[in-house]
Length: 76
Image 1 (cartoon, rainbow, N blue to C red):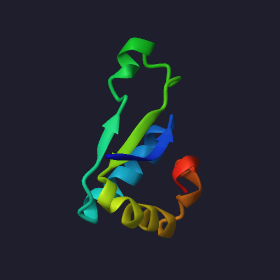
Image 2 (cartoon, helix red, strand yellow; image 1 turned 90 degrees about the horizontal axis):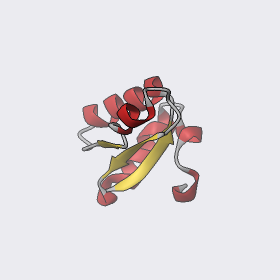
Image 3 (cartoon, helix red, strand yellow; image 1 turned 120 degrees about the horizontal axis):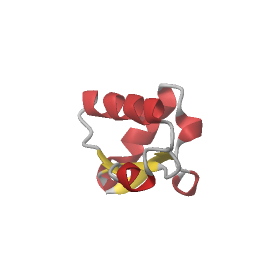
Image 4 (cartoon, rainbow, N blue to C red; image 1 turned 180 degrees about the vertical axis):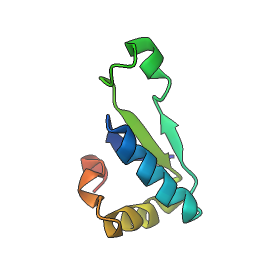
């Protein structure tokens, strides 16, 4: 799995995850349970992960959906 998106925005990560799943791209949200540790303050970002062999397709899909600017910078 590779990081596609890192954000504190729960709406954004939910939207991206929904788009990817509808396209048949497996997703996994890393650091989701850290909100329990931080007290649900939204300080720690969550990471949207996708299989390495689907990363380019996932990037293209999110770019076409208008949220390409939100993608993890180190992988762009």
